[in-house]
Length: 573
Image (cartoon, rainbow, N blue to C red; front, side, top):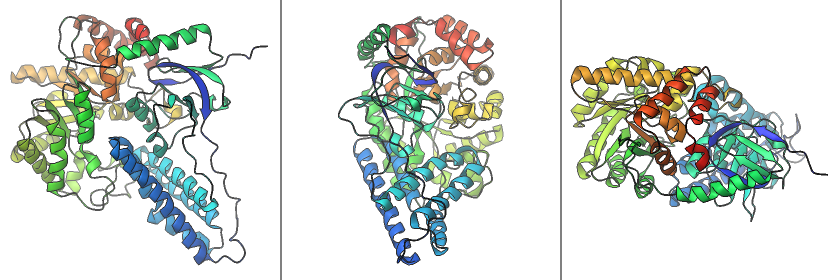
């Protein structure tokens, strides 16, 4: 008797169709018994020494993995691993655990309770700080494993390719996924803009998140995963096998992007790359990116106790600029705060960091850091041949845009711009663009702030979706404001998209129809986005965008757009 097919529906975050066998993340480290005392004959001092040694061992292991990531050009993974490594020896965590040792608890129990306290504090802060709870729990499990002398939780080892199924993945896990072995990634938690989703896209892995109950699927079960439709099905049928084979064949034909990005009627829509360092920039250039639409400069600042010198910054920026001679490179100034706290710049005790001093706002509390960064960008740009544009994150009002433009021009930077990440900026785009030369939509934050939904929470995945008509309406308001400013000034004021939405081929068509002038994404997404855009004219894209705008939900907006784009099913997107 054949087993019954079971369908698990989630949210598709990266396209692809595969058939493979399931391998689940190993079970989490078991919680030590409540009240577990110090072993007989062990002093609190001995336990503290063992605890600190275990924490140092975990930190060393994570830093070794970070070094491997750096050596392999994985800057995002490196940043994640270094952040998690720092958490392993966090003074607050260890001091709290040592106090509990003095009260007679075992090292394992003391650490467990101390980590719970730190995680609860971060969770209550909300927003981006709540994301750090994943780091705390990950580190807790690793340190307890080290104390027990057992293998730490993490990505399972397998000589054969597999579909990885998990409740969710810790940042340190997603950072070292091997796309040569992991066919697809399916989690029961997370959301479409969660860390897990972003890493899956950067690795080109078919991925589904928020698929409730999927962790019930047993190891070794053959399944079909459709990353575009957001589903996992057990007992794949012949049609599933055929779809997976066809996708594999067509994906190979989408392996290259030679540019330029252009619609079917010849309308030019430049396709740019999001990068974090020189290695990523070189990879993006090799992948055919027409420039950089988002250079995340914060990677140079993270996990440091002091501000990097101007000389260090010049070197880092020059490496990116040199990869794109004669082409546009859009630099985002330091986006610190919230999930990216810096000891020398931000206040870790803010009650609501996601709504606090972050991005451009740090110049209000720590003047000088931004000016030194702009000076370093100017120097690096002078040594390279790239067309350097500079934009500030978290701009909310026109006066902030005007002040940033003034700082840029005083530093010798000719093309200042702003990020549109909050509804206020979208609704006042016309006014903003009378002060600066361009704008770029950060759809991750714009969605989160518009829908008041934390992007990490699986239960809120439906809300935290860039297909939400309210988000699309704000994008339309931004481009309309830019068009008015352009007409009034007699000078073009372009609006690009550098958030995750740009990497979705169907949504890229809608964005083109809404009047966006360029799209920036992970380099892996360039071929698929270019292939789909090349099948529609601008008027057709505008028609599809109008349908999505008129929808009553994100699901309906996605469905009506996809129904107008049969190329998506043909390509398995």
